[in-house]
Length: 467
Image (cartoon, rainbow, N blue to C red; front, side):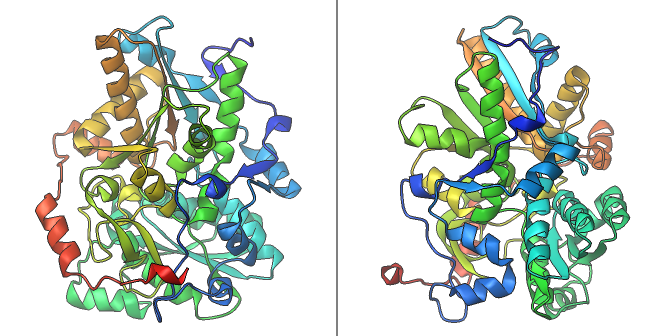
């Protein structure tokens, strides 16, 4: 058994995984295809190639259990921020009164990347593939700004132009993120904007529209179709993004093995579109699906203001608010859903990754939700103990990990609890300021309103017998 220093378990650069882990061959039910919104039929490869880098499209549908990580990417990861450390939260355990080895809390620290979150794992990868095929510009949307920052950094590495449509509520809440993106030469626009037909249509109805990820996706997709040298880049939801993030879980498995732990009892991640949660969870979920870890509990955590898995329907829906992008089968609150302007902007998407939706629908994983005041309070508790102020998104996982540890303590259970610290909160200080001054509000959309919205929307009807 290898000991670890002050609770941190490190890997060497030569231990970076050489492959991404693909869960598609192991899913308990078949992955549904992306659907063309024009005719309701599976999108042909040519349509996907016009939007995304070709290699990403091929990875989206790959049935290979492992997909090689190009050597250049592994070298970039090793020279900047990977492998990321796994921490045992010894001081948090002490704070919770669970000192000893009966209850152990571990967190994978993805906050040490150049932009402070897990997002560069796929941003650098997508920029690499785009550069290889001659793309000159990548355009995207972002909620809290973590994804926009990651893509701006990745594009800067490969000398690509980067354009970001940032959800308007976050655009004004998080000025630091705008500065960071622009430091990497990205153009950043508040969404909805006047730069696209999609954005204009929403601003005409409401000049003070707070925006949503669905609207920002519509704008980015519209922008990307202006030229064949512009491609769209997505930071969550789709299969290839989740694939790229599995480097997180693979490193974690190696690190746990170094201290004699085969698997956690409870694995936790926040989820908005699903990328950081899936990145940690997928390598472990494959073991669970194959019968190696039948008792492991995997929990995704949502905000009560935007609970697509906990309160949404599992159905076909448009991925964007203007109904121009591909149709996917997922847990959804409806493409017209406009969430309250909570500070966890990265968790405000109306849908959930199809992979995660399938796993939840088949009861391989569980989901829960929390109010933002309790989440930010847990973030402060974690910061005082561990010295890292988590992003509001990551603080959802912190809150659930603390709750699970206290339940285990009350029940005198032995538990290994693992969560993903997907990013730091140094650009999200307004949320903490509002909490400290008593101005932070909780939002929870009633189930009746969600069902009313879903019932009133123009939902696509897809004939699943065609595939």
